[in-house]
Length: 102
Image 1 (spheres, one colour):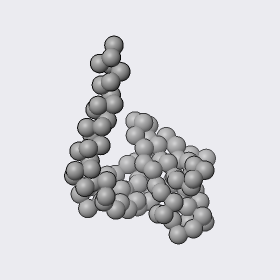
Image 2: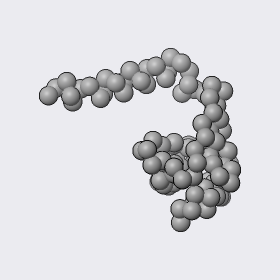
Image 3: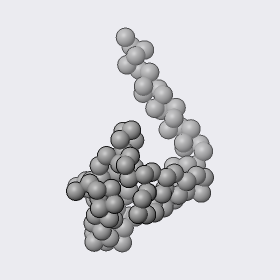
Image 4: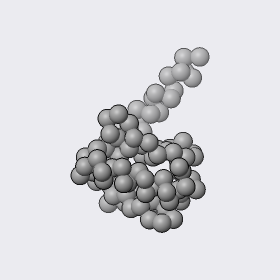
């Protein structure tokens, strides 16, 4: 039973260590909000997510914006990505409108 409990933490730690050593966590990412999709762009890769794969977008008390996808993956957008609260709210509303999450 211990191996089943300890295994996920070990895998998670190994994955995070790989991300740290690759420099991927330090990369600046840009999110493009297009009419049909979200595009996440970084120096090492570009990911495209159709709005149909979006499950939820929410704002936490600490002003992080969380974009959750139906496959249970998510993106956390820090408050520093926005110049002010109005930009953050406009970002959320634009995604909600495009994804038809109202």
